[in-house]
Image 1 (cartoon, helix red, strand yellow):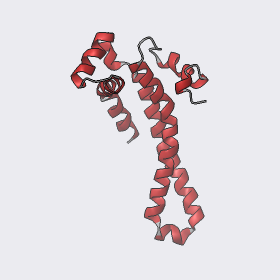
Image 2 (tube, helix red, strand yellow):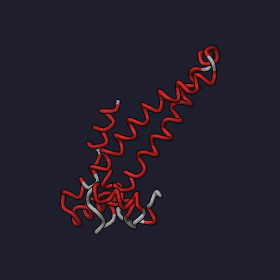
Image 3 (cartoon, helix red, strand yellow):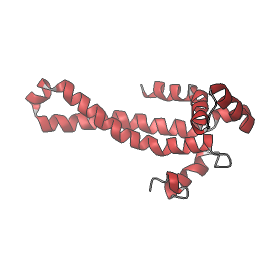
Image 4 (cartoon, rainbow, N blue to C red):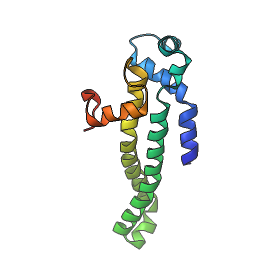
Length: 145
């Protein structure tokens, strides 16, 4: 599941780049977003932000599966053996929802870097340069601290 998720995120990345540009534009459609992206950065513009996508979805996937097991054990212990068996579907659902919540927190900073790389001309063009700006608050409107 983890490998498939990361693979799909990377394969669909050019389309995601176009959608990010489309959301940042005022007016226009998909074809206009493609034209603007290519005009601003050539075909390379469709691959901008691939590193934050890879790292972000990797961290989310690891967090999701790891936290799921941890929450499943936690909730099972809280319910007791009999109630765990009786309400296992609800317990699995609660463990999954809890895991997804925390895993998405791992994804959000990387997604923020990716969107800034894709939509802000003149902003950093790499994960290595962009992540510190997000984490250290030099981009106040997108700072996580």
